[in-house]
Amino acid sequence: MKSKSENSFPNSRLLKWYDGVKRDLPWRDTQDPYYIWLSEIILQQTRVDQGMPYYERFVETFPTVHDLANASEDEVLKLWEGLGYYSRARNLHATAKHVSQNLKGEFPNTHSGLLELKGVGPYTAAAIGSIAFNLPVAAVDGNVYRVLARYYGITESIDDTSTKKQIGELAQSILDTERSGDHNQAMMELGAMVCTPKQPDCKACPLQENCVAFRQEIQSELPVRTKKTKVRNRYFYYAVHFVDGQVPIHRRGEGDIWQGLYEFPLFESEKKLNEKQILELIEVSESDVVESISEEFKHVLSHQRIYSRFVLVKSDSRPNVKGKWVSVADLRSFAFPRLINRYLERSNLVIEGEVSNI
Image 1 (cartoon, helix red, strand yellow):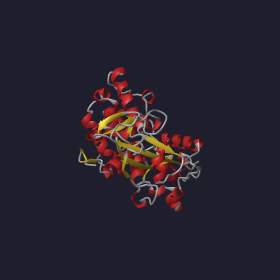
Image 2 (image 1 turned 135 degrees about the horizontal axis):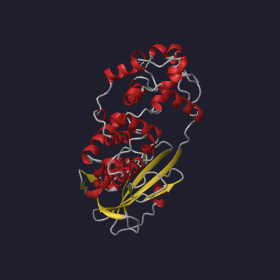
Image 3 (image 1 turned 180 degrees about the horizontal axis):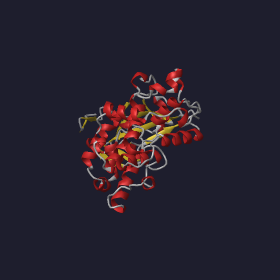
Image 4 (image 1 turned 120 degrees about the vertical axis):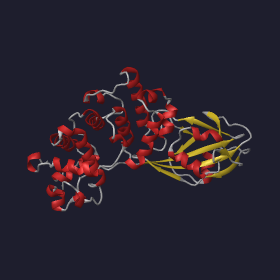
């Protein structure tokens, strides 16, 4: 592991670069911890261009932490719909309630206090604290690991706890404590815009002069990763029962993906099924009319690949399934996983918010 003394870090060049090229983002125009916290939670595992519309909708719908706290979980999940990692939305809601009800609407102004908030880990606490309160704590995310691994030529795997700890200590040692928030945002901006995972734009990098990876032309080799994520395949078959303009839906429970979101009656299989097997699995009766069996929809999560098909069944009477029956025209008001929304967008079940003539 390289030390700071082996290759000093040019903070002044980094901050000068940041001042000149930083993106105009709404959460950079405020020091209100509510807006900064909101942006950080939304941007966890989400690109800025994808997260921006969500941030703007949340701010417009819930201009204060009290507004967010007073919302229902369904309202929050519906607004979050499409971002994925729905535990973030539930934690967001829980923290808003805690801040509103127990902290009188005031976010903690210490690193330890921020860490006590649900859904706020070391990186997020450091980002919020440094930006909102100029707390001298380095925010270390994947972008920062990559920048420092390349700059200092760190060849140990960043998947190892010891390497992460050492890089964290290194990040803290080079922090410009007079401009902690700007320094943290500059490091993240550099990783997001210049020192990217593939084909970094080294010519535009303010750290180029002393960067070990650049000098040795090993940018593509760093940072070193050794762990491979094991991905599980799952096969979901949904029965969309259509009776008198209504369909049954139910809310997913705890202990699995998409907690709190709605879905149609689900039948899961350990293997991919053909159409005959699908109809046997969902137990279509002789009096039912199978209107359609959808194409296969694939949805990739961090540790799972979901393969799904939807069977639209027209019936004269309601089958005994769990959940509640809702009008097809009202489906858009419920928060569904992106996988199901893709089906709704492509099917003829709903046409511009009205029941189709199936």
